[in-house]
Length: 268
Length: 341
Image 1 (cartoon, rainbow over the protein chains, first blue to last red):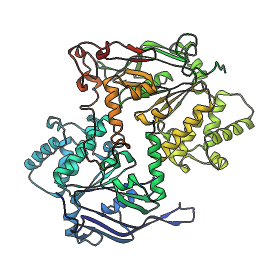
Image 2: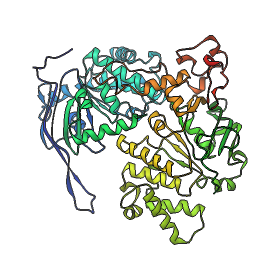
Image 3: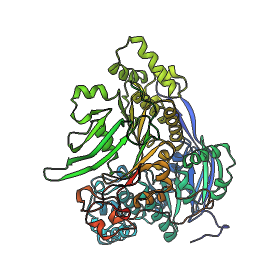
Image 4: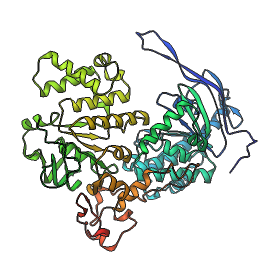
């Protein structure tokens, strides 16, 4: 599961820049740098957390990695391929290997699909396996994420929030990805359920040597969940350190400000 | 407004509580034959100037309780039994006109989501609307009061904000407007339903600090609802923990946080702190504490204690009947057979 540190990291981002044109049609337009020269690396089987205020560029960065947004300049290397200059056939092979899990699972899952259909859909789109193999795999994935297979015919809204998030995880695992992008996957879950989902993802990571790019506001969880942390502010990564070092000794003022507000919250 | 001194910390007979809820039960018909009970026998009181925190998982009945106190329950909900007494008046037997003089003026509600702001009204109009509904003032004075309220909310550049539309403000600013609306008529009781839930941690911390300062400045009592224990730990004088429509434990903040009794409260507190900053500085990818299972489905409630199936300390009796409320100390009570029931 562990890769030696000399090998190429799974994900390497160099000088990534994304400019957005802002202002409404009656206003003068101006350019806003959503990403401004971001460099990051992420090893196989590890978790990189992106933290920062709203609007710092965390989601833009994740969307560029997921190939859902095109940066203006810079490079994204994923497992030896440059994601920004892929041929069509490479694209088809690589895209399934990067999957997303969102905050609001109720909105992210197709409302009229049964649980089994939700999990099978990515396989269907990719044209993988026969119908029988697909439904077997769906059952297997449901077991893996802790959903009872007898509930395979239920619709997403008939599950509780925690179970829906499990379903979203099962769906994202269907194509055997290497990189999971987790955009605030625990927000909106109750405390008692949040822990179950955290533990499930940690378990799956160890089992399947998954790599996580984890976007979060909750620094208590970041401390617990990730190996390295990148603090973002106005499109730049201002500090990138191991979670241990960052929480012990934050260097950049922005990191300090962020940590100060959790310390204040947990003061009792 | 009658100001009868701050009753903080004073427990017992001489001062009548501002809000007294007795044995409140609310039912809701899912269809013609199925009825669920979002609230089942809730009793508590709020004294003047006191901040009472209410915590629990989603579906525990927190919002149903808030809406019952405002008499704003949707028509599919029904109050089955119990009484709500506010400043000596029985809220449940008032008619709509009488309620109108209380709602927004003497009891007000801070909503969870600042989407309650009307997108086509300016911020100033939102505040003036509340004031005009409850005070009969000359036109000029509404604006002055609205500007003063915005200043109280520690907003900068209040004249610009007065004329702005909701979408031009940040989430934290919008939440401050919702709070300003609730406080506009200096109510005696403010019910805040998850006031920080939709905000990022930086703005959430600022809102908590603002509420802390407002609490010190005013005589207003707060019922602060939050599934997150952190804001309650900072703001509340007393904390109530709710599970499946019942208050399972209530007591002073210090006792609930440091000496929780009920197994659910203890499990909830263990989940709240995945890593203790003092003892564990390292990266710990160990499993974090959770409560096994999920909250009960209100459609399939069994006899006995609702928490029984997830409880670490369950006994045979737990499956048979619901534990009575017992008093641990004068201000601290809970429902659990382990402590007598």
